[in-house]
Length: 347
Image 1 (tube, rainbow, N blue to C red):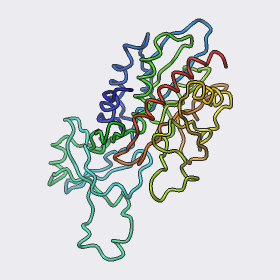
Image 2: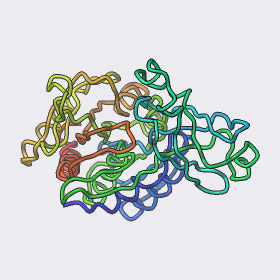
Image 3: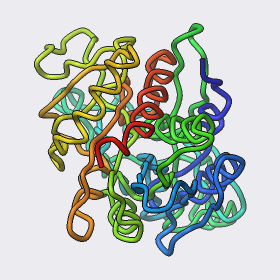
Image 4: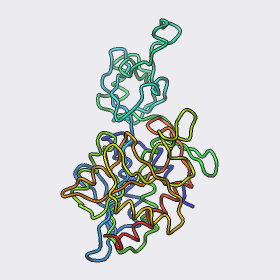
């Protein structure tokens, strides 16, 4: 079974979209013992390279390092921070959340506030408060005091949530989308040891705003096969129909047949399904979700790359706290390793 230490450290670190430096440093550290080279491209993707045999297929693994979060948009004269959303965030989950504002002087605590319900009119209490009517309170009494704390426009803001185990199999934490995929990638490189394929383990940036890091790194590497390691919606909760989100916790990793950005290449899809069945690894199939993964952009690199996504079913993604099964995590690792070993038979 996998160790959770890497996942925990990645989950607790800050890597709001476009500000992934802390995660990049961790990924470099975690990958270094298991690859021949670690490098960083101009956009900020971290790339670990494990060399294989000459003329063997090149495989690109992609786990995105960024997380949804906020950026400081303005500091009011009263010392409150107004903000912009980075990535897809439902306004309903923002109110009263604890946050950390990362300033040049270090992180400071804050809380997302609004007009108290006690003094709201009836129609105000019935509506969702839009994010641009919310603010972050850092305890400052004026704009000058907020600036003394180090706050400035453009500072990133993460949700203040710490990783925790709910049981031997279930963990919760911030940014499991997609620190889980990053941690899977580290474990895969650890277990691969020698491989015929040359494997590029890529921690990508800015996935949550259009898979930008996968676009540039996919172009630079131009692999023969691309595998995005990500999470998907676990629909096994009240109020969700199976047809809306069929993936369930503890039923194995999900192989995405299609999403809003990508239709999986049939050859790679067959590779993953046969690897799972040959090695008796439980798996699920899914199609039609509105979101997308890095596989969509990798597949469009240069003249095109056969690609697919391996995803861990995860509850409450794109919220401050998510939940997943370590059994699914382990099986995602096993499936990825088995698929890489079989790639020379297909490509």
